[in-house]
Image (tube, rainbow, N blue to C red; front, side):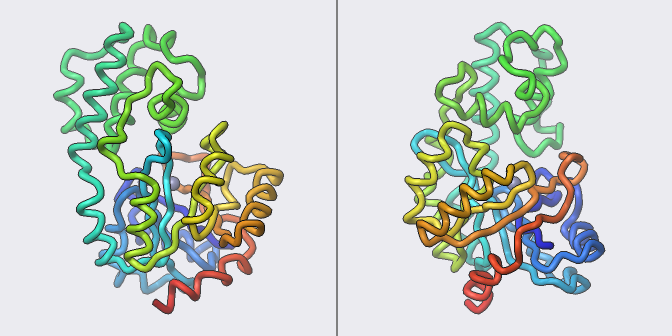
Length: 285
Ligand SMILES: [Zn+2]
């Protein structure tokens, strides 16, 4: 087995990179990549990775805008210092988080939702990676807020709430962040400039926009994540066929987040032959 999509405590996962590698070693993974959101700090201490006997591909999952839709792009096999250098101009985390908090809070307050009086001030001390995740927790503190959120899954999980509502122009919870987040084109360019390959992760999370995103980005992407923990066989086959038609590489991963997403365990049944088709091209650079 392999796993090219995992989050460490450098973003919204709970394990340290060394803990992840220990677990990967235990279950015998052959190829792995830690793909934290918008940073590759997990690779700063790569010297500690020595005990892992499989192959490690550098990885990152970058937020981007495509025609007003918030998506992610995975980068693999890039040069870490070069990537870090380019990232410093691409994302301004503190500004983005602070703006997200203010904009989402304003939308929720307008609807009549209830919050603690000091909800904005308390954010800095909360230690929660995403401002939207923090505010989602705060929303759930008041049962009276339940009636404002259309579906159960969005009430329960911030990741669903974010995709279905915060980043969906059709939802009353939509907040426009196109002034804060780079475009998919810019993000893919940064991955290529740092000598990596760009893949589209978990395409079916984009629901009705899947086809539009795939078609629009096929020419600039290097590959697609065809194997993913929640995909059905039909979905995987659809993406495999898309890759064949468009001459794209194939990747796969779990999207492991440690105890932040207990239902997702490490390891992906992606056949290794797919990874062997492209991994040497990034390893040799
Ligand atoms: Zn992820």
